[in-house]
Length: 139
Length: 139
Length: 139
Image (cartoon, rainbow over all chains, first blue to last red):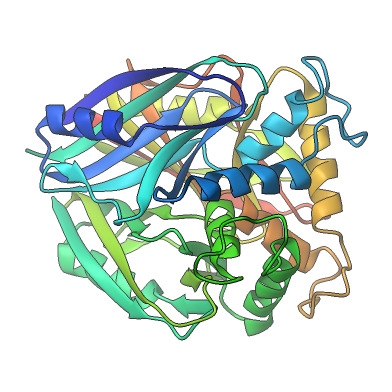
């Protein structure tokens, strides 16, 4: 059994959006009880991460870490066609994940107690982001 | 054919544990001859990596690199509820992998000659870590 | 339905090779209309990335970023058996991806408009690199 569905997220600029519930709803709809769930971002300036979901400071700190590691407007970068956050967004995406594959058991993605699945917008302005979820396994 | 099984690793603090043999044993038990094997860590302060398995200095150097890139007790971080290694452990996890998907051929994960699969503990103290392995393919 | 096939790339040293077309050809050959396509690199000093495919400066900038983040010949590293680019190649591989899993829909990998799939050679000299592609889904 395979089910494939879109998630569309309108971001409000740099930051994270929790998509755990939307992904779990697709797994539930698929009827798959055991298998895998692939989540894929169709962009190169936004990405996915699994992250601690209890304390919002964790995501705030990750943002601060990335801002220091890959500074906007870095003179190292030639590609600046869409502004000082353009190339840093590509670097951040490559350093994190465009695709995440999760195990499915008993009809749901098996995440740890503190694991949330986040879409991470790396551009400073908001964008419409498309995710494709593919659930594959036994009903 | 799908087989899903746990691996439990009791780590002794920051460092790597080779789980290649345990994962290969699950693939073998599944009877799958061609397909995929997903390994998933149910934590946000430990991760997975494929790494050169011949010279232990490679993993020592990766540890040294991460310690420099994401220093413990960095004043950048607000989230310090579990100590100076708490937030760095989350950053290291996001920069590496919570999920790894390996090809299965002729009844085993097809790794390169020098590729080993490691669980990477990022906390300074030991933890009980749960991995979930999902093998999916044709018998 | 599962199809598994090799791609062999002879690299010319540090830099990227677009393998999107070769991967899409394997998906097409498989006859799979909906499912997943896993691409796996059997090496620990070369990796995979999804990257903006329009402006070559993006890949040039990523190369420059990695050269600064993980400098060749860094005195931090003990493992130098194959030269000053040996250990940096392992670090770059761990920070990027050995395995990428892509969604397949209507008989092709569903990439975003600007997403290309690249093999990233991290050694300064050319190497023969082996990729294994596994397509899995419904015909």
